[in-house]
Length: 205
Image (cartoon, rainbow, N blue to C red; front, side, top):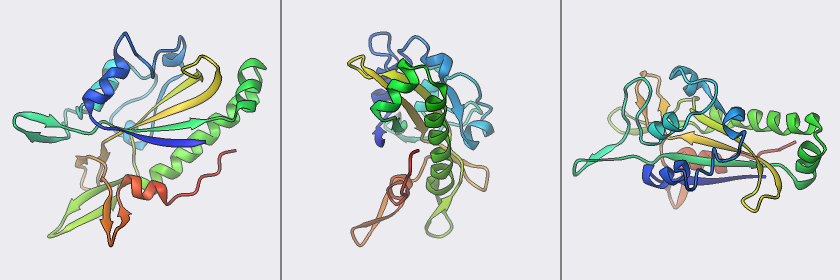
């Protein structure tokens, strides 16, 4: 199963990285199993394990290349952190992969996550561009912090991956901008990351 929720802003995201409630990287081996994923991550020189400070800066709109994304208002930088795509394996897969230690099931789940992310990156990554009027450009690159979890908040066996999609993408003019938010036309969402996302049908193996 795949669910999506918005990380609204850096303040909202920050609670996940505190010592009291470091949810995304709280499991003993979560950081070791984490990875940077996506063409955007490659462009920014991000690879290997996801570090908290690195992730926090990106949630604040501060990219490793020195670019800052966001809108200044009353001396404050406003920036939506991004989106949390949660890929959840069926209970039977979780038991076989974790309790049964059958790596075939774990690898099948992880491969399905990565293949689905490729589709999302190809079809959903959009940014606004201006040429006399607003247009939406398919950028085809995302910066994703991929973090594995093996238990639920209730500590039941539950294999799932959080794909934290950072709110940043590189346009064809090499400018880094926020992902386009949804735009409506005749009460129908036609553009933006979430709009494109909901138009895709996913098959998780």
